[in-house]
Image (cartoon, rainbow, N blue to C red):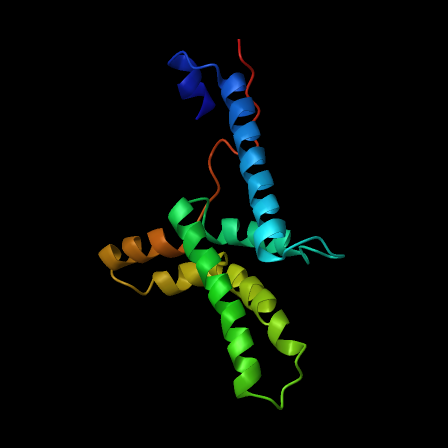
Length: 151
């Protein structure tokens, strides 16, 4: 919470700018490494809408680094499975498999962030419900998008 940090003497505005710059630098390094090490150069539609997938993975992860990493690995696993499925199922059109991770990620977001999960959790015993809810349900940070006026 920005108010709590300010009460402890932290310059909240400076800290927000610092973290924005650090985040932007990390994104820049990630983009550079992607284009120099993974794709090996630039091409038209270079990222092919992967930014939306990255946003979906962050929402899926509930802004927790380990859950976001898990979501990213799951997306990578889906892409690898799509490549393998092309060899196993030659009768299916080739264009279907590279697109497979995208609707599956959208479906995962819809399922994990719906009231349906809450209704399913209500059938579990209380201790198990809390444990499973902590894993499945996510919420953004409380200070996300909140305006803070430093006095």
